[in-house]
Image (cartoon, rainbow, N blue to C red):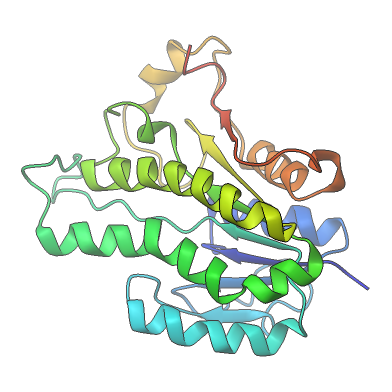
Length: 241
């Protein structure tokens, strides 16, 4: 029987690379995103294993749990909470604590923080049955002020790091491991202008690839990390040192 992954934020970047990695390893992948399934996505069974869901809408997220459960057949080996939003100003600059609209704070936290626990709690029976694992995707912005990531995004990712520890404590006795990864500068379609200046100061002097992030996610969902729980792996080329 194939192992099963549920991945949020699958339509681009790290999510896209993660689907390809797990599919290549023989996993069945269920994807969630705001968009309908894109027929150009290069993995098998994509359309029937896709759930269109707006994670910024609490009711939509809660209602989607039942839809997902119906497709799981009682087992979920891995839940990867990758979806994240970071609103920008009209000119593309970061929004700080003073500039961010209060409604935007709510939307960011619903997607980046509340959705991961809603899904993990709602699918806990399936995770326990599989002795599965949860991986929360945080960010380097969760531990320091970033020149491009906004205040709401950064604080939601910091909260998600803390949530990871709490979940590891609570899910551990049930046989479910919970970890997080904190990517730094990764080459995606949404890189901000000026990222090259950050890269010049990185110890490794290069940008990270989405496939490198997907490899770490896969490690955390595999038997090779069977005694790893409650930790956060930084994927940033030494940016934190």
